[in-house]
Image (cartoon, rainbow, N blue to C red; front, side, top):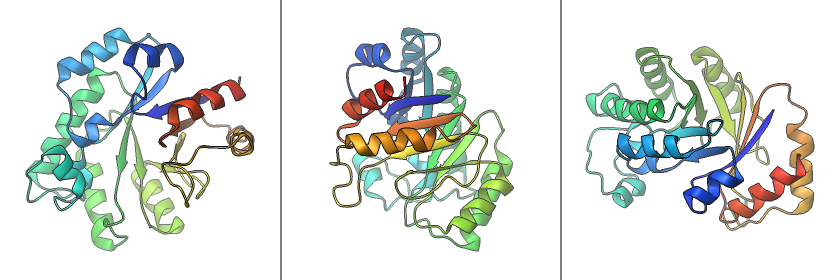
Length: 231
């Protein structure tokens, strides 16, 4: 099965629920909403609608990240899966939202500043061996070698998340793609008919369940086109 959606509600919530069966929640990355808000989303959504939760940045990003300032966060010792109270508290906030939404997948997206190193791998090992395995965990790294990503994902039993126009998915019980746009235009990129046709052929080759999440400015239009294309 191929599931298609957007990274964030790209239109009104009601319109989105009519158009799609999947969304990746972005608010949980910047600053998690109240559990009551998540419960309202779940109650309003169709029964077969799926929410993916993007883990709070306090787990994955350092306090120097501009996304902390954007969210008005004032942490000093957090991020990069550090074994500190702030990180595990952030996980509990993320977990509460995911459970409220009946999510089966939680995405951890790390920045390029989370370097490929033994220290980083050890932090990930400590984090994922400490928290409960209530969800499928997906990880979208930046700048790590394919070989290391494969080893980490296989050792920790997590799904490798990537952009199919950039690299292959190397590990996981599902296939998880996030489409950020082309290298030249990035988020401003609007996917062409030929690119969407290529994507259709590519994702159709997997026997696993495939998740395709658009994360560009034109995500709504591109996701609608791709949904029609794979029908």
